[in-house]
Image (cartoon, rainbow over all chains, first blue to last red; front, side, top):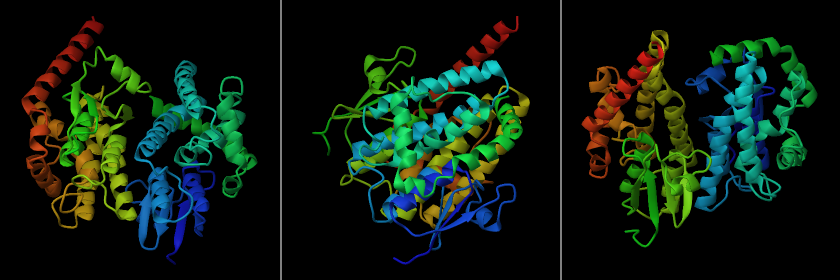
Length: 227
Length: 235
């Protein structure tokens, strides 16, 4: 199959990383198109008219949107190592945890770093930590959520492996500590040091620089979303 | 008939999420034991089977629990691949489209409806109404794109998106009496309005949808309770 594959992403986007790392695991050659999200391209608006967000996967004349939908698509459309298990029950478990991560660690977790209302921030952080404990328990001594190799849940949780450390440094808070979450911290190291993941992980230094310069903006966004 | 398999569904009769699971089971012609939960007094089985959320629906298959309505529907389709209708198409791109729209229903459509009916301020409810209008318009386009002129999102036969949206049908029907709104207004979204009639009339669907007057009764009781609480709080 020689159809062109392009990925519309944005530097530093954890969601775009999910799609990119999936392509890399499958060994699919692709062209990466980086968006300036403050000035979205015609290409992006044409292929994701509903959400106008990255990532968008372009495969031949098909466009796929929503990072986890893209990951499952990549798993099914291309040969290579499985990203989801073969067994229906194990697939259901993987989808459950991927969904849990999206629900609990996208907006809510982000708020626990950026909200200026201290009391509200602490409340959200407490809930986030309970959810982290649930994830910690899911690892149960396995190297990855997917077992011996990286799978859907690991990819879904990539922000916890890399981006959380950046937020912690920029905000001066420690959330994902070795003492409280030893397995998650080991998992995070394993994930970011994986040879395939390394190829498409934005550098921590660059992320710290970008997010540091965006502190006020992130705080304003968090406050407005919290109401 | 999958009678030898041990299938149990923990649910609550008014829940649209539970209805999704029932629709999938019904469309595939699967037998199962249904357990009605009292959500104010959740059973040990529910708490044990869904320790993360403690919510319904939970599908228990040969003793193993599956949680989250979209996960359950996909599981039913994959675990019983040889039985009855296929809910997800076989082509990876069409599967991606189906999953995209199912996610849209939960991430955009449902929250906008909740905001419209339960927003705490007039401003919030108005915002919800605007967002709902956009959401149903997008879904109307989705139906056109996915059905390609055929009766369902799944084409000739109902599929994954039909089930995910179909779970909301009971409340869609109740909405007219409760709020004077038809979320699938035939004037604005003719395809969706026709789809709602057609899907709702299916032999595998009609008996499974909860009765509208019972849903209306439950909603009115909830509204009265919330009003009483608000009145009590402001005294």
